[in-house]
Length: 95
Image: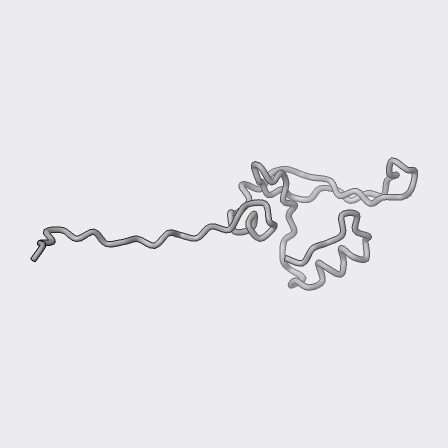
């Protein structure tokens, strides 16, 4: 994952998205503690708390759980490694 600024500009978002195939769907990943994927809603120009222009991307609903690998890639969940299984001998005898 390439990090994006905490308050990215329109140009920075376009730059990040342009790395992917044009037909790839875009979703928002929400809530690291209980991650869901959400569809995008409207995009509007509004005003921030300081009175400056801000582009807002609305949320239009859930698209299911966020896949575990995606949550790991975002750094929200630790990467896990499947433990090695040891074989247990059946009927082993001491000699």
